[in-house]
Each structure stands twice: as C-alpha cells, then as structure tokens.
Length: 279
Image (cartoon, rainbow, N blue to C red; front, side, top):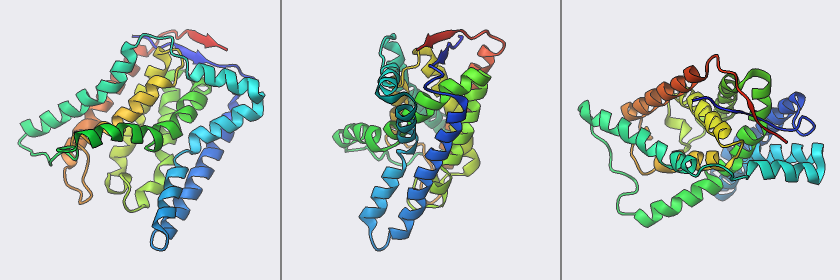
C-alpha cells in the first residue's frame, strides 16, 4: 500500500528552518532534562515539573517557528492542516488498537516459549488505567512531541528525501532526543537497553510517518497512536522492569515492530509518491 507524500507551503516550512527546529527542540528539552535531576533531592516537585516541561520541546519549537515565519495566518493554516479530520475513521481505530495487537502477540509468544509475565499494573485499577490514557496524552509525550516531529519536521524532510528516508532520519533524531533520559533515574528509558530502544523508535517513526501520510497530513491519528503505545504498555506487561527483568517480551515487541516497519518500507520501495496536500 503506497503512502501519499504530504507537502506544506515552503514559505512556512523550509529545509533550513527544519535544522533550526532540531536545534530549538534539543536545546529546550535537554536543558530541562539535565537541570531537573540536580533538583530531585531538594525539590522533587520542581524536578518532576522540569521533566514534564522538557518533553514539550518539539511541539513548542514547531509552534514558535511557524508563528515566526508565517505570522498568525501561517500558524492558523498549519494548525488547520495538523488538526484536519477529513479521513476515514478506521485509521483512528487502527492507531488505537494496533499497539494492543502488537503487545498481545509479544506477550503470547513469550508465554508460549515458557516465560511468565508479571501482573499487569492495571489489574484491579480499571478506571485509573482508563484515566491514564488521558494523562499520557497530555503529559506523557504525544501532545508535547507530535506537532513537532510529524506536524512540522516530517513534511519537509520527506519532500527532500521521500517518506522512507525521512522517517528513518526522524527516527534517529527521535532516539537521540531521548538520550538524557537514559541517564536519569526513574525514567522508562533508564532501564531499557539503548540499542533496543533505538530500534523501536526508528521502526515506530516509520509507522507514524506512514499513518501521517495515509491521513492527509493530520496529526490527530499519530497523537492517538503515540498515546496508545505509551498507555497500553502500562496495561499489557511487556516492558522491561526497573530491575532489568521481563526483557524478552520487550525484545519480541521490538522484533515484531521492526518486521512491520520493514514490510511498509518494502511495499513503498520504488513507488512514485504523489502529493496529497499543497497548502
């Protein structure tokens, strides 16, 4: 199935400004993420707040650059494209339930191979787990990231290199952006193998780019997918635990994810990708 390349007005998003976007994104996030741990002992609330604020680097950088380059009109047009919903709603269902299938298959394979799974963190807390989806959307990554990665950077990168290479490049940048979190106690990344995380981020970037283009450049489905990935991982126990146990389920998740991403890249290889949007 061929993805359609999404384009935006070059007056609003130019290649040189994508570099500026990366600089602003990394500077904002890394500054907060490096300062936060220094305050953890004396001011834990402030440290947590800084960590959360740092996660909004990509979206804030995108909004700032679009407003600076295009003014209110440019910002309004960009947000209209990012939030447009003129696509089949099956894509929203796919975005929400794909992580369930992915993690479910990994969990089933782990058990079939003789492994055991730890209790689900959501066991006995169904309402809390449901509310957690909304919390993850707000401060768990999607809202703070996707308007930047997919809404701003991806359209210009894929105009230059095509969606396949653009998604891989963005996946590498996405991985590097998380780097300080690997050295911060208490984060999900702090007890994950870095190579496995990099593979999962790059493969996820391919899936996110594919979904973004299939839905005419809307950020809404990738917001749902990002939320679902982060939230369902707190329901289905396939993540590595802080003591390093439960590694194989996560390895299986990454393996399946990479396999799906490779299928998407292969199906699109050699295809002529047409523009779906030129606003």
